Picture 1 (tube, rainbow, N blue to C red):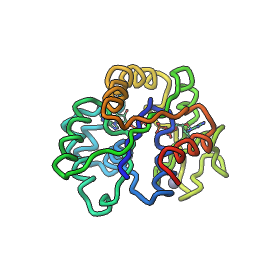
Picture 2 (tube, protein in one colour):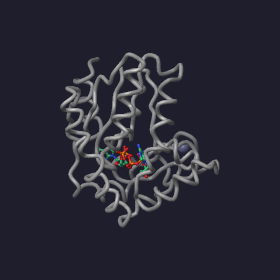
Picture 3 (spheres, helix red, strand yellow):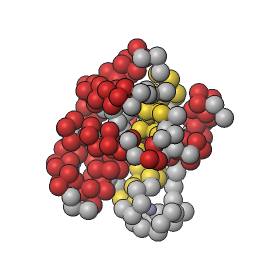
Picture 4 (cartoon, helix red, strand yellow):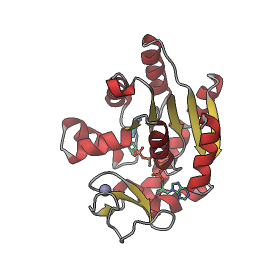
Length: 214
Ligand code: ADP
Ligand code: ADP
Ligand code: ZN
């Protein structure tokens, strides 16, 4: 099962992708997580990516596409995967398409998690990310057991720099300009499915299971 998660920043792609990955035993591939782990480890890619991420801009396609194509060619991706945060531009979708074609395969579902902009700033300002394992919480909707401590690994939770309201506004503009056109792209490809991302997390997940099957 090869799945793409579409949706605005903060729509709940990562939250749902984790649950899907667990239920269907496929790897969860998040380009945002890959960039953040490169930043943490001080790699050259991390330093390049950070300059764009801090401004709420997309990391250039040439730094992003090869990385993903390489990842989905690995052994654990044989039975499928869930792409969270990629593709984010038409050229990325085309690069993915070309790579999949050469492997003799294609995407099964592109799931668009729909949430209006007016909800997004609220979602993002309450999001807390683990500095250790990358797990995501929300102060109101998915609070950790102990304040600012990760349930999974015990490390500190932080508000990501790019989740501050000024940067979120910029990311939303970038989303509408560069990423939203992918909805039409995957609709034309016949694989688009839409879920209401404003429902409770569990209800969003049920809607996704209804699409993917038990
Ligand atoms: P969110 O899901 O909240 O938008 P992500 O963790 O997916 O956040 O991404 C954080 C940042 O990483 C993005 O704002 C962007 O700068 C960069 N990024 C992640 N994925 C991509 C991608 N496919 N193409 C370009 N930049 C990306
Ligand atoms: P994305 O990967 O699309 O940027 P996340 O999955 O990180 O989004 O979710 C953004 C924030 O909103 C997180 O703090 C998360 O806990 C919270 N969240 C996710 N889904 C829901 C939901 N259905 N209802 C309320 N809050 C949610
Ligand atoms: Zn953690």
